[in-house]
Amino acid sequence: MVNYVVNPDAAYAVVEKIQSAGSNAIAIQADVSNEEQVISMYQQAILKFGTVDILVNNAGLQRDAAFHEMTLQQWQKVIDVNLTGQFLCAREAIKEFLKRGVVAGRSVAAGKIICISSVHQEIPWAGHANYAASKGGIMLLMKSIAQEYAPHQIRVNSICPGAIKTPINQKAWDTPEALNKLLELIPYQRIGQPDDIGKLAVWLASDDSDYITGASVFIDGGMTLYPGFSTNG
Ligand code: BGC
Image (cartoon, rainbow, N blue to C red):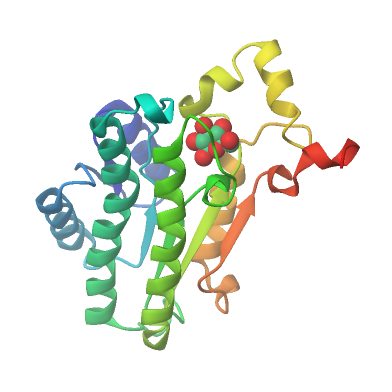
């Protein structure tokens, strides 16, 4: 089930990709920060597929501003989508996982949640206080529910991407000058690709990572290695 809010074409392109790989998929419109829409999205998904096994909590946005100029609207929008959205989607997933339990032959876990966080759950980010606060919030939301539901064989982990080539940070990579400046922050000397994140999500969703819960996996080409210290300090 592919969720979207404003771009049906992008969602249906993903659905087609899944279908052409031989699986079943549907797209459902819902604003993850809206409780009724999230509940209805889960009802539709469960009606179509019988249950939900894996949640990838992926919705996120930025509304950047100098802190002293940040409007309450900019603050609220980011917290609503990035943090409350993860709460609402995780809550509905956990309800379904608890109701269903482990299904022998499908997975050794009763369910898996993958929270898409950021390197900015750890790295402070001037001009992006709302975004960094939302990601810091995701860290302890994820760990708290991982602790709460581990006895039910539910695993909850976070992926913490660095700079990945997507529209959210286009200004940071779409000119050679911008990209060179960005690479100063990435010891591995390349920008990340969406596939880097996809492969990690697949592994975290599989039984191959069964003993991992409550973990934040950084996938950032070394962005969290304090690259400024390689020639200083
Ligand atoms: C942000 C991007 C940024 C990256 C590294 C991500 O969480 O959404 O805009 O390029 O962190 O700073």
